[in-house]
Structure formats: C-alpha cells, structure tokens
Length: 239
Length: 239
DNA sequence: CGCCGTTGTATCGCCATGGATATAACGATG
DNA sequence: CATCGTTATATCCATGGCGATACAACGGCG
Image 1: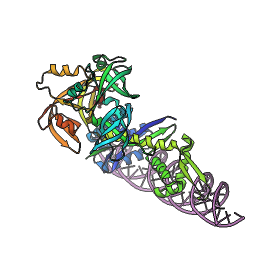
Image 2 (image 1 turned 180 degrees about the horizontal axis):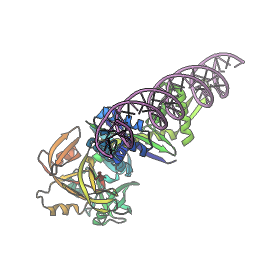
Image 3 (image 1 turned 90 degrees about the vertical axis):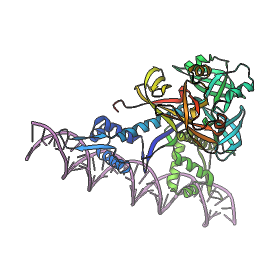
C-alpha cells in the first residue's frame, strides 16, 4: 500500500479562497480574451464561470475589465491584479512542490532542551538543534535534503577545527559523514552520507559542487544545516 | 489586500484521498471507541460516517475492527494501519506547515544559462544559480528564508576571499549584504539584508547565531544559499 | 428469552453545486 | 437602424452530498 502525500494549494484573500480551478479560469480568460471563449475552452458553463468572476470581484475588487458591445461584441481582459494573483499562486504551488518533492532524512530522538520554538534533540547521531513543537518530548527530526550544506572535511576530525570554522556562520548543526551513495543526474546530484549508528543523511547538491568537493564513494565530508531548517515532529508516545 | 497562502493536505492511497476530515473521524473513533459516539462528538450523522468508513475500507483494506452485540452493544477500534495513517497525515501536515510558514525572498531575472534542471539567472543583485523550469526565460527566483546561511563578512570585500572560502562548500550562491532589520523573537530572529538595487533578502537564524555573528543594524554580512534551495518560477512574458 | 446499545443498510428529503436555456443590454460597424 | 458577438441575469433542472429516520442483525447478560 503506497501512500502518496498530496495537497491542494489555495490563496485566501479576505473571505474568498482561490483554488486551482479559479486560477485556470483566469488564465483561460487571459488566453482567449473573453469569458465565453474561456468557458468553452474549459468545458464549463458560461453562466457558472461568469458568476464566479463576479463573486471574485465582489470579494477582492477589480480582477477583470469587461466590455460589451462593439464591433467584436466586446471581451474581457485581466487586470494587473489578476495577473499578479496567478503568479502568486504558481509561485506558491512550485514552492510547495519543491519542498514536497524533496526527500527528507528523519532522525528519531528526544527533546532535551527547549527555548521558545527552538530545542535540542538527542538523537543516535548526536544532538540536533531544531524547531520543536510546544509539547511532547518524543520526536522525529526531519531535515530536507536541499537544506544540507556539504563542506570539505578539515582533514583531521578534531572538533576544535569544526567549531572554529562554524563560529562565523549561522550553521548550528554539523556532522561528519562518509559518502555511501552518489546519484548524479543532469546537473544535480543526490548524495547519501553515513553518519554512523545506522543513520543516513540525504543531501542534494549541484554537479559542480560535487566536483569542487571531489566527492566519491567513501569520501569524508562535513554536513551542516541550520537549526531553522530542521523540524521536529511529535511522535505519539503510546506508539 | 493581503494574500494568505494556504493549502489542504491529503494522503492519496490507490483511488481514495484522505483529507483532514477523515483523519479527524478516525481520531474521534479512536477516542470514543464507537462510530456512533464519534459521529455524535463530531456533530456528523452516523449514517454518513459509517458509509465513509466502509468506503475507506473498500479502498485501502481493514482500518477498523468493528464488533456488534455484547454486553456493551459492541464498538469499533482502529487497526494499527489506521493509527499509522493518522501519524503520516500529521507529519505531512507539519512538514508543509513549516515550509509554507517560512517567508521567501523573490528576485526577478532572466535565465541566461541552463543545464538540465539547473540554471543561471541574471538578477539586479547579481547572478543566481537556481533550479529553473524547462521553459521560459523570464523568471522570479524565490529563496526560502530558512535556507540562507549567514557568515561573517571577511572584512575586506575582496572576491578572492569569498571564492577561497566557498571553494570547499556546496554553497553556490553568495551575496554581500547589510543588515537593515532584525526582528528577534524567543529564540529565533528574522534578519533582513539589503543586497543593493532595492532588493532585500530575508533570513531566519537562531538567537545564538545572531549573537555569535554579532549582528546589528548596519552590519556587513555574507549571505549564502545552495542552488538547490533556490527555485525559479516562470513569469508570463507578455506581462 | 427479552433487553440493550451497537453495527449494518435502506430510504427519504433538504440543499448546494453547477449545467442548460432563455432573454436583455451593449456598442461599433456597415 | 439592423447585425453581431459579447456581457449580464434569471430560471429550471439534474446530480450529489449529507442529515434524518427507520428497521434489521448481533451477542452478552439478567
């Protein structure tokens, strides 16, 4: 049984929520220059589409400029507001697509310290500073692969070196790892690191970075990520 | 007019999609031990709720263990499958919550180079290496604030220093900026950088990092982010 | 064997969604 | 002034979602 994580993006403005269908409607109006043609193209009824446009304008103001009469019978054009809306929606969608598609590494652990939204989580691979929920101490820390920064291992594995380097960045979490898998696609490579304790960390870097760091199977690297990019999710205690 | 980005999370298994209402239903059954009590608690009709449970089981297999008769008249309990489903849903939800809540900085630009999914975008603040769509050259690059790494400006603004430092990390994008705003909450601070050309970059760092970097209004810092954390979204050419 | 509270199942009706249709208003053009 | 293709608006009707109700089945228990 495969479970697909899915979602419906929408934009809420005041008391209306604009969903994918609305955006497609606006885009179709923009394409065809009239609501009638748009309804036709979308296979929807004109009446319904027109009422929706009116409802949208009642709620958020002018979205279209509708003319009737004239040699061509009239037509409807989008206002800049509508175009901005479409762009916002698409951006919101692709942002979610990006993070939803991104693989994440998960580490079980327990919250040992908490300061506001931030907390320290004790995990098999060491302590992780992450965003933690308000309640529950048994958590899973999830780190998105696009948030992990790789850097050359400083030769010796001395902690002194590490802290010296990190002192001047905002990267709070650092781990030494060994490259166990490299999956190089076009320009982007997926790198799997072994952090020990049977836990791996997935990262995504560019082909160029892969070469610059001269990574290959067995390479030692340092993986860093911001505390604000690590999120702890509570796990039911009873299991 | 404020636009709220929103979304409805759901899990798709085979040909059914489980939404928030379904999860709440399962949770209510778990809480009360019977479908009747659950329907009562949720203010829903028993008939509808029962039909939904049957529909779910038709699609994804046993989700509940339903008994009728007996001293207490019977009851319904969730199977481990259902509990796992609830947990998955919650995790999915909080993951999306995390990334959706994060603010993003947006830079307009044009794609000047493309290699597979990756591309170089020319923007007012300089070139950005980002994930680019397959078509369209006019784009907006969006960078999530939790993906930006701050580091101490290397005193002189010489490029030689910068490249020397980055040579050994997987951070492809680097910008020098000036702190124009610091919004410090509990343990997390939101820092706004001026990158010049009237463009700002939002970042989120921990209070500790804020102090370590000794950031204050007017401070010079270096902001870095991975190419795989920057996403370009196509913009309609006609504008 | 009847009681009881639950699960099953069928049926009715309300109401919202949305298509289908009809009719008017509009305004440049010939 | 008639034509034409569009917008504007009202009305009818089919469908689906969902509550409400009714009734059977179940199985310990007194």
